[in-house]
Length: 341
Image: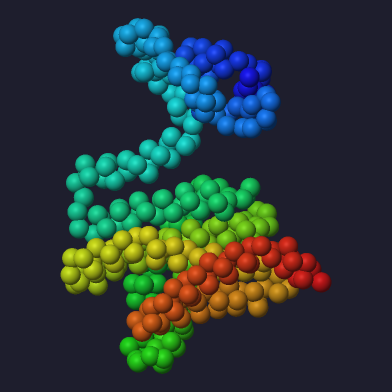
């Protein structure tokens, strides 16, 4: 005799012959959990039946055609539900369709050259955006604002990197030998690029009709970073990467679409964290704005500096960026208490 266990409830006890009949009728499964009445030993129904030498044969419910008729055409092709657009209520399906079919749609369009690189970069940006929306959104996050931040960053990028970035003379140090090039990568590359990502966040704070949580600004900072990654990804794919051999160019292109935009997003998120606190505690805003720009710029500059001489150190800096953002978020309440004093 055995108990049948389903949903953590015991049913029975049943004789194994009765259980075998239920298996044959499809009411029980061979891998359903069961427990011996006498010893309390647990196992599967199949294991207990095998010990008794019982081998149930599952009965087919008619022929294939009879089974299909029993299943019903409405389950195979739910035409009525599809025409009623009930599927639009399930956002998961829409997300899957966007992620899965966007590039297929792109292949049908008469685009080429620079637009192809930009469209593919946007595709990966959308995937990152969905990821960040799922993990980092707060009650204040709005999809419309997310889109605005993304394209505001794009606008700032195109304006500043159309020539204004040359006003930062520290860029010249990027061509010097290591470790002197750290100066150029931190105060030139890092400072300029992180400032570009910071601009939409400052605009957002200024236009906000309620105090924005630091976590909210972290999310928008992540999106600003992804937007910058799109610009840089296209820039490198159409210039530097095309000069490499096929295998190297392929790897670099993938990195510019996936991993490296993620790093820009991390640094943007760190910036957003301190911008958020500067907005909530204006008495400390000067120092918090300095931290919002300085910390990402230093991480960014050090990553770039070591990338050419000891890339494993750059990986540690990237990992440190992840840990820093996660730690900042976990200590938000403690930080808030300190700034209240």
